[in-house]
Length: 115
Image (cartoon, rainbow, N blue to C red; front, side):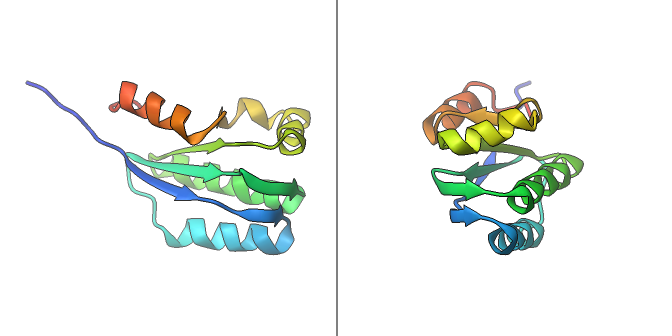
């Protein structure tokens, strides 16, 4: 018997400053999308050049929500200043961080049954 579970990939791409206002928009968007098991949530931060604690809090809330629902949330394309925030807060050990979207697709395609 063979079993294969394919991921449904959802990509969110915030832009500019991920601050109080944009963090709330991201938080609301994540809440409205109703995570389902085996969904992969990708937060592509390629166009985010500033993040404060509110933006970081929105990402942490999203991570907690998706994990509770049996989903996987990953982030990619961190600018150097944003990567430094993750490293200083030690959240780089909590989030799965990928260099780019292609690296995520390669990982998912290599192990489609693993969350």
